[in-house]
Image (tube, rainbow, N blue to C red; front, side, top):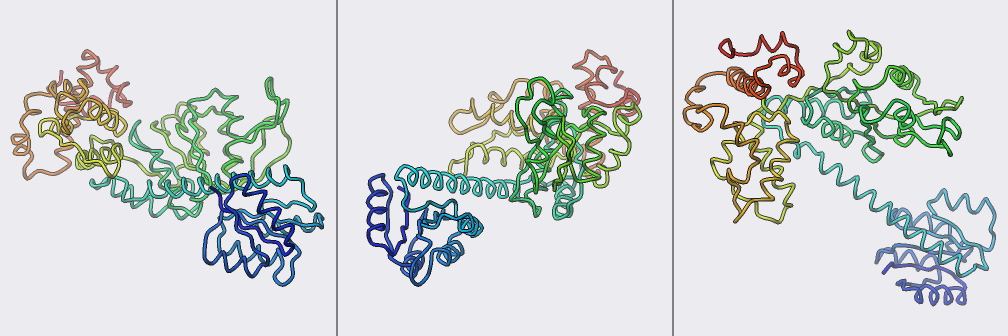
Amino acid sequence: MPRVLVVDDEPSILSVLTTLLKAHNYDVTPARSGETAIALLQQDAYDLIISDIRMGGMDGMQLLKQARKMNPNMAAIILTAYGTVETAVEAMKEGAFDYVTKPFKVDELLITVQRALQYYHLEGENRELKRQLTERYRFENIVAESPGMRKVCEMIAQVAPTDTTVLVLGESGTGKELVAKAIHAHSARKMKNFLPINCAALPEPLLESEMFGHVKGAFTGATSHKEGLFEAANGGTIFLDEIGSMPMSIQAKLLRVLQDKEIRRVGSTENVPINVRVLAATNDRLEQLIEQGRLREDLYYRFSVISIEIPPLRERPEDILPMIQHVLRRELGDKKQLPLFDPEAQLIMEQYPWPGNVRELENAIRHALAFAREGRITKDVLPAKIVNAVGNLGPQAGHKAASMDEFRGKSLKTFLRKKEKEYLAMVIAAKGGDKEKAAKALKISLATLYRKIPEDAD
């Protein structure tokens, strides 16, 4: 039941308001002066304060200023018999949601009260969601046991407080949007919007409209003005995913936005100033796109001032087991006991090369949880694709001790090279021995594949 503090030095008005609001299921506390209201606010919390503007002693405007300092999340409505624009503007500047003139209409007052409470309830939810966003993307929630991921976290900490454009690089599923959200969550813009857009998901006309907005009549179907994501993200951060898929015509417009800090809606002749930080991500090698004429070189230089490259999961084996525990805890919550991972299942998860990276690992854990029995995750509840792939890597997949002996005293680079060769061999086998298809699946050139595969792979 919403708690409402009603303040008026006229006993009759105070009585009417109290009776009316109680009849509509509000918990009402009356106060006959501003001083009494302040004393009540010091003792208790209220969702809404309704105060007359003209009172003896402390008037409504003075009360509003103090009340907002004491509880900035409380809604406020001003009552006045002097319904001038000046009074309304001053009250709004001090944080009042709205004002109602005396003599007031009952329906008008009740609707205003309902709207004020709904608005501040949504504001509270929005603050809580942003708090959760900051909590979720704290560094301690990013798994970074490996040197590669520790370097990523160090770079996030360095670039987050700046307004510099950042390019996040990495294979599909490595967590590029997670890194972008972490940058936003640790920046001065964290209480403003973070708006992502996948540049590969929309055709050119829709992408332009989605990014920059449009005016009524700009094209068939544009029946009203539409604000674009750059305007909606004003003061915050916009994340352009799959930047390499952006059409050339939009690249030119984006370049002007980055240079001039203003956008122009589709069909408009007016420029709108914006204050937005731009983060971008891609799993393409942008230098190759420039050579192919699919990416503007000047835009590339705008984005590549600071680049953060996320290593694929197969190159950071130290992160696999901590990642599994992190995902289990996230899926089950803080109160539930985590299931036990059988050694054989754990070994399979460590041996698998994770071509789909973290996203594939998360899906594998969800699959295992769905079929787990008696609080245990065994080989039988892991996705068959993963179990079969590890089995196809060779006899060393089932003998951890022998594997460890093989690499004892050798460098991490040696270990990773061996695992990379095993993964390449698995992909080539999956493509029926066709190295050209394997190279396309791996998103590397055929020449690079020949350099990386073992000499006896043929």
